[in-house]
Amino acid sequence: MNLANVLNSYSDEYWDFKDAKNDGIHSIANYPAPMVAPMQHELLNLLLRENQGYQKMLDPFHGSGVTLVEGQSLGLEVWGMDINPYAHIISLAKLEKYDPKIIEPANHQIIQRIENLKKSNLAIHHSFDNIQKWFRDDVIDDLRIIRTAITMESNLKTRRYYWLCFGEIVKRYSNTRTSTFKLHVKESEKISEMQNNVLEDFFNKIKETYKLIGYPKLGPFHLTCGDSIEIMKTYKPNSFDIICTSPPYGDNATTVTYGQFSILQLLWIDNNDFQYDSNCVDNFSKIDSMSLGGAHSANNAFYYSPIISSYISQLSLHKQTKIKRFYTDYENAFRLMTRLLKPKGSMLLTLGNRMVDRLEFPFIDVNKEIAQYYGLELIHVINRNIMKKRMPIRVSRLSDGKPVDSMSKETVLLFRKGEH
Image (cartoon, rainbow, N blue to C red; front, side, top):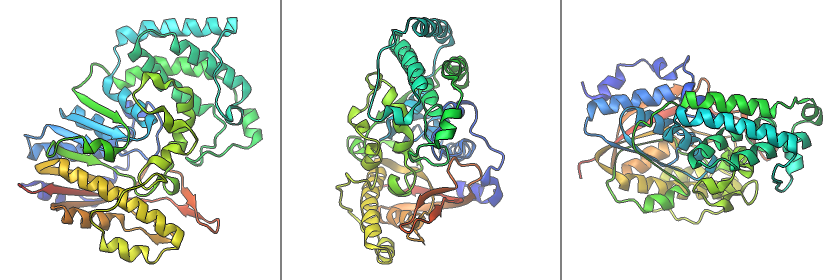
């Protein structure tokens, strides 16, 4: 039975994964809109059963690293890239793993350092613009203590583990609302009522997280933080057997503001321990403006979709510009993805249609159209309900101030590249 027939044998409800949780390794850090790990695992497993020669997989928009972890667990050598340094930090932790024989004694040492710094009041001063807007003074003091203690750790890999754990504590004790991924300050009453257990929560986090990640490392991996389009240009054609990803469904500013979600953590974490451009945290919206369709977009599309042309004509002028900018960036990325896919290689895309000016953006059909233009064959389509995706109920607002509901459905497209 070929793969298309196997996939047809599943019921529509199966792919909803109603009871699935991103637990274990996928629960070590919060990140917006993660993919459903069991679903990606099942799809990749089915692909590998039919194509036993597949060895290398790419995710050019890896987010929290779900596909990379699941691909690696199935024996694939994985490559990933993302423009968001916090996504890079999370995914790196999941892939590089941590030896309990190193982490456990290091935990005892850092806890002792933190307790000594608390008594001596010798923590290194750390600050950034509007720090007191986003953190209470007593929280700032305790975060500075932890940050100082982490910088005193001599082992780079262990420091990276602590930065991951620290980022989660930073987010938890920030003054930002949890109802949106954008930066909005909580009500003053809620800020003042928040109990300060910063140090205790950090201790608990470092004691438990490495156990969820697991050890030893499962196989080779390659992670790069930066612009996916520019990075893919440096790779040789026909390099990957599988491309498995969930690309952005629109520009970050009006869909999911991954950058704003991550910026406070990144302003506390020492970027010297990671390979990414520190300029991306110059301001609170820099990462989102650097992403697909952002203000820094300067690409031209090689293929202009008729579906896009028809859709754009129905939008306001302001939204037309945003969609054009996003499409040209995405078309460039898609073209490079097809270039990197080996003959007979497979592409798995998890996609959704967002609303723009109260009109559904036909992103799924756009992908089908671009894929056909670049010689990919559509093998199968899976439509599923989003059961527990980490998304606020509403993700943005229209110009009249009315909120836009977030997506409740998504589609998985399986493409196959020809033999030549």
